[in-house]
Image 1 (cartoon, helix red, strand yellow):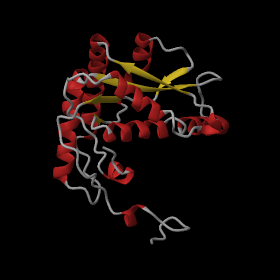
Image 2 (image 1 turned 30 degrees about the vertical axis):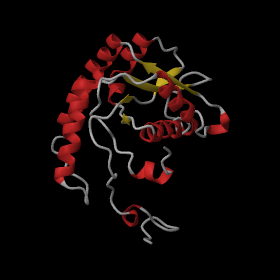
Image 3 (image 1 turned 180 degrees about the vertical axis):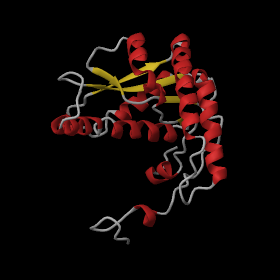
Length: 217
């Protein structure tokens, strides 16, 4: 059964409650095939996708992730929701985020999109380095979005997170990354233990302008 692309986008909710049931390899390969259809700067396709299924490796990542989450949760505990988002909604998001931190290793697949920098890892904050960094980073996130949409179209739960990057160097060493390879994010994937549903956002008019910033529609 096919799903309209707009229906997929409007119902691509972050699913942080996942069942431990295995996900067939053919579905993961289909998701990755969707990922590589994304645009990339100069068509360099400087990406690599690490599929993590080993239980011990998933547990190692979960432990580091939980440590990072505890720091993040403490830092943001008093942050109020943005205007237009209810406190009840934020409480649900925080509860689901905590669940993910405690149970990430139970997801059957952790998918880690990687960036392969052909000229070596980007360092420094000069003008050209900043431009290069933003340009090359923008070449991975369209693929990430394709992954999330493909998961939703296949009935799989997934969410995008980056907290593991607090322990980026340690994780990179364990996973055997070369010097020019960076983890960009982490996507737990599994059969959903929570309901899909419409993604609630503030109105378009509140986050868009015409011709000049602040000139509303």
